[in-house]
Image (tube, rainbow, N blue to C red):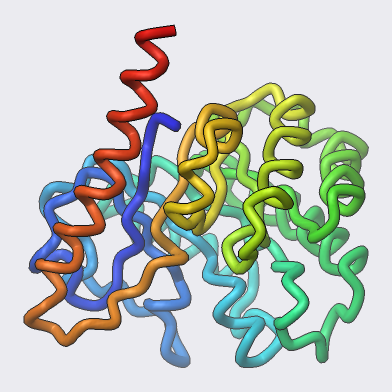
Length: 250
């Protein structure tokens, strides 16, 4: 793993000191898009925009905005803060989401592919990140096959991502999916919301390019956030340094 992104919340930019930041539309959308500048630290070097699908699906089972509106908001951010990554509007496949719309994972995967096509068609110049969705390994493989079928796999994306992994507790299941897909995807891979426990697994760590702190939330009071972030940052830094040292020894 080369990069780790810290998921921003409101006011994050006032106390954070990290270079890689992930901002989710789920934290910026309240009946309309709101670019909250306090979420983005001055130290930011890499900025990853996520569509926030999981948070919307838990509540309503659908996105409250269109692909065109999402692309327009991404462009608004891009005008002020250069984006290094923009996730396509994918459809999470975790069992606990609201399935009022798109009940089956196949439907959700097919809609993910359609949204990927639409996002890129609306604004091909954004640094899009296609997301491979599913819950079982077979579903992820089906999703990747669909990307190939519509011709997106042949496009020159600098990064791909694997979705619907952050809510899982069994590291073995995550490892199986990551290792299998890393053999199929000939591009760097991002995994959303990996826990530190999962990242400690060498086969996961060495088969991904980046991950983020989406699985970790700030439960402390406002005045404790800097302290908690400092502790979390030290754990991540220690983990990365430890694996890099092992790699040098090998």
